[in-house]
Length: 228
Image 1 (tube, rainbow, N blue to C red):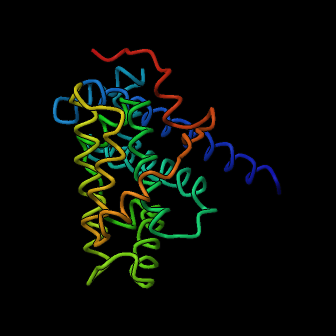
Image 2 (cartoon, rainbow, N blue to C red):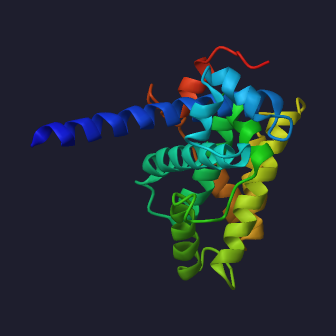
């Protein structure tokens, strides 16, 4: 009775490994060539699989792109939220979280390039870790830390500005180490904080995001470039 269950589990694990392999290859290709310039042949070459294997998992580059962003975004946001969970002030959690995301992008430029080129979805279905951000926006608004008529407007403000900052970090060489701190300062002003309160928050110390060895960001940074 256990044999069919075992075979089903092994098949599912094999399929998940191949899907992860394709996503890792896509992340490398997208970050090197850009989303618009990448074609399925590039992804196949990077993953070293057949066209048929690719189509067993994805129909288009757009589908792979969505899968990459979903995995990277949820992974990074979940790690950041775990690192700031002991901070009781929701406004402080948001400020520190944004800075940590931007600092991580500086250390993993391939991820920053990818996210900035793909764009960040506001969909909770595809990026459920955005729920952490919405939680902090709701709590900070309820306690008067943020002055928002609609927390969803705050979500657009934070996600949109952070996406633009990721693009700047991936393209500009003139940005100082203070850039993540300063862009976060202006996000807080947009959320309704005073300059003094916002400055106090962005001056709070933050820690680097601790990425586990099996993190998608770590694995793809070690991948050799095979795309042509």
